[in-house]
Image 1 (cartoon, rainbow, N blue to C red):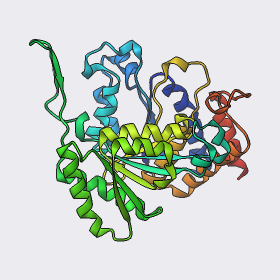
Image 2: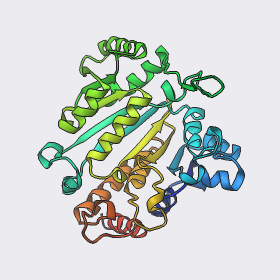
Image 3: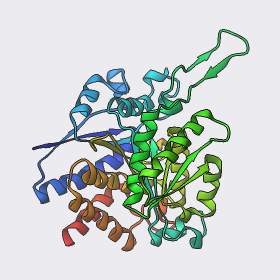
Image 4: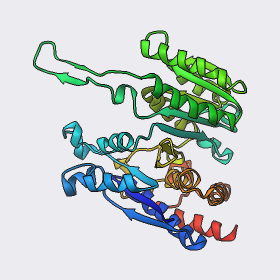
Length: 358
């Protein structure tokens, strides 16, 4: 059966890193005779400019029919003054919600050859390998009511952080099972010292731990975890957290590696259909300069091959080619440490050449 892939480049460097990734994907389709159909459509600011909506109905319909969505990045100052429903970022949240992509997997790993690019001392960061499991469709980003009141004095704004038991159980299940396949350690992060929703979260995760006796469960407060990620990141194996805390912690973890341009992510539903995107944003300040690092997007393709497209062997080959690429000294500007670097448009050809020779 044909597997459907929807490519959504988006804005800024999203277009550049997606172009590199689709070059690699097209090579894999041709070389391994994969029965994939790839469709490319606008999303975010580019979709708003063309169609008046950051996520046109046609895009959402195509996404719902797809086995995997490859998502570049959205946003930029050009659209910052739009109403929330029209802003590019709303496309991302809408896709997550409409596709029921409740589990966000964000690996943070270090290629030891790039340890000098990390702001953390080599002896602290060496062999970093963390998986952050972030709940993606609940919490304060989606909670109602929310709003801004400018009709009374003083003006005020409000949001709602809310989780029900089912939402907590399903993300905790993903995290426990991920820990079972790794080093069997799970740290649940919350703010149970001040938030009722976090107290509830902690009680549910603690109860569920009885079903996973082989996994060592610990709890940390989110502010402490942020500090510990910098001081001693290798204490962590799998981290599970709510939408807000997971968003913050995964960006901290990404920075440890030296460049957030290196890190992929997967957002999955209960049947492992998903959306795959780099952890970096649209970076309009470096867009159209051919200097963006596409490895996070290419690694996101690898995650799509593994989880949604059921081509784990090819995923492993692609991961191996990326390791070889790094080992051979290829560097885009973000990880070149001031030395000579290659351009975005060159990366795919190098990866493809490595794949040919493996």
